[in-house]
Amino acid sequence: MKDFLEFFGFRDNPFKITPDAHYFFLSESHQEALLSLKYLVDSEEGFAVIIGEPGTGKTLTVRKFIDDLPEDVEFAYILFPNLSPEELFEAILEDFGIKTEGETKNRIFTKLRDHLIEKRSKGKRVLIIIDEAQNLPVETLEELRILSNLETNDQKLIQIILIGQPELEEKLESNALRQLRQRITVITKLRNFTEKETRSYIDYRIAKAGTGNLRIHPKVYKLVYKYSLGIPRLINILMERSLMAAFVDGTHEIKPEHLERAAESVGIRVSKDRGRSVLTYASLFAVLLVTGYLGYVFFISQPETKAPVYEAPVQATPQTTDQIRLVTVEVPLLNVRDRPSPDSKVVYVLREGDRLEVLQEGPDQWIKVRFPEKGITGWVNGKYVSW
Ligand SMILES: Nc1ncnc2c1ncn2[C@@H]1O[C@H](COP(=O)(O)OP(=O)(O)OP(=O)(O)O)[C@@H](O)[C@H]1O
Ligand SMILES: [Mg+2]
Image (tube, rainbow, N blue to C red):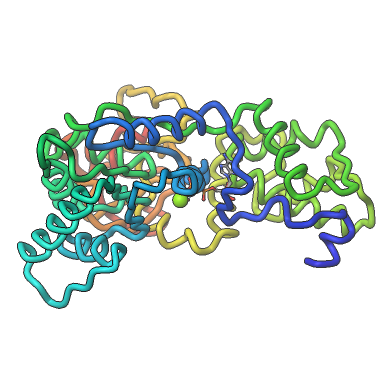
């Protein structure tokens, strides 16, 4: 790595994938997200929500926001929130430096409330930030709403930020959470970079790392956008690998062939007759392979939602073959669950184009299916298949 950085004259790896606020690039969408968080702190609102597909910069945006928080704001940051209400409150207390040992839920709640009252009396504002919030059980979300109701002298004791993948939004729309939903005034969505933003983002990160002596062939920007669809994490992976490829070739210029090699090395099929969607799936999958630490979160909780670039699948008459109805997966990845609910266990992850047999139609558009290729049976959300 040192040789490679020296070769290009960089101080630092410009495309590392760990979220480092020093590299924060203010795209329109990221700016909107930051402003919505700042607004929450300045207002008397209870909740702010940020939604984004994997790798679009949710965690980095929050890091940036935390870095810029005023002195009088204290916060707890929770990253793995697949927790019961007690466990979550314990984790929050722990983040505030308060120990709990085998105490009852009520006792934990009281401790947290007392802590918040004490902070308020000292003129502090308190924030709870929950990343990967799509993993919060419905019951825990409901308890968070109750927590957010706490007030003293008409002042809120706490404000809560939920950050998550699109499954979070789906969860918030469920009937059980309608009261919480009413408390959320704005849901901000992070979107992929445009082609122009992709270009500026690449140049910006290189400049931050020290510019060095790197040249980029003009066609490379277009290709990066084509293969990454403007998802920052994928841009970083493609650019880092392209730099490596140029380094191996002993050149200071990234050429289209380096980028093609990079794309292939992370599993993106660089074939012209395959559609954009195949690239999207491969890209997302590649991200997860390369950024191993996210794999767990992804396979356990990847939402049954579509990437924003897709149109809603057209509902038409089911295709019938000897009484077996076949449907096709229309999104890059689709979870098969053991029950017809987004809270149930994921038993398998289907890919776009997988063909399924419909066994039964359930509530809220859920369908029970069998995936003949693997002999797997389970429930999928019927919104994401074409009939
Ligand atoms: N606005 C941005 N400026 C600079 N880098 C960014 C930006 N957005 C994303 N990135 C980079 O993209 C990568 C992924 O970002 P991040 O981890 O924040 O995504 P995420 O939305 O939290 O993904 P996940 O849903 O998998 O947790 C990181 O390397 C991050 O530095
Ligand atoms: Mg994240």
